[in-house]
Length: 410
Ligand SMILES: [Fe+2]
Image (tube, rainbow, N blue to C red; front, side, top):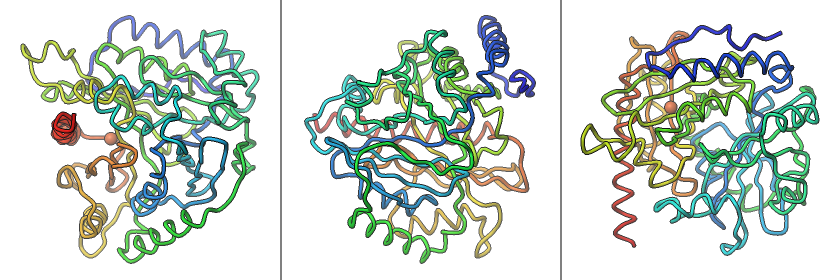
């Protein structure tokens, strides 16, 4: 049996005594009833974009990541485009509403936030988790007060019929879904009519030709981690809720004091390699916004107040090594800059520190930032505090610029 509490703890962020108590109780119980064993890896990520934005977003993802366009599933009010690397990394489902007037719960989650409301259909929705016994998992989760959409709601939302979907988290506004898939089977989504759309295929082929021309196609690896930003007061609850919904464990948390922020990392108990099952990171301010004038600024809380709690970035791993006498990450970033991609800062970190990282500008289509991360010589640490402080600062600068822009447009 997997022991979810057996992993070493890192980090310097202090948790409340209740957090430590709940963590022990929740994980022991999860292991005991077989939930930890039944819930496996992240099989897919779901992202929604504005009508007609999917083709441009797919092109962007196919240049900036190793994803390939597979197929489009059409339903009455949505297109769902499937992107895949291979069966050892999660798929990305890019969902696009056909009519801008269609309303739904995911749109509502954006509409109460000043910048989120500007692109009401654009947000990261959540993860699909592979499970070995969906009925047992749903029953165990219902007994733990987890709420699910019913079959009628799933049909109306036009989500795949072969999934059990949890209602959005009050802390992160993300969902998780469970589905069964023997590990030897390919992923098949029970949704609508399937076709390879000519416009998507053409955009995909052009993007891959660009990636090859730049010489970055062999340097990009799957997703390393997904980072969600949440309100300061929800930090501990959001972490514990995610551990309740998944078979992840609490890896540890770092205090990024000068950015008034903490970075909290959870990882799969089953997959030590993040590239097979990405780490989930939660970032929260240390103090709430109304203390800023007495203490210090708060880029993390400002993001949450403007966009709502949501996924902030997707980190893509870069292969360790050098190309044209540059670290691969520098080569990738230079190449993408040359063809117009903007970044929020220069590449930070060093080979000696074990890790180099950078944030792209937020996507015009999904509002998500792509982080690139290169680990040197099998660096075991997940991140360095200095890098995270610089990244948090850079994202804050981006954030305020966007805020001003939105105000000017109001
Ligand atoms: Fe990150």
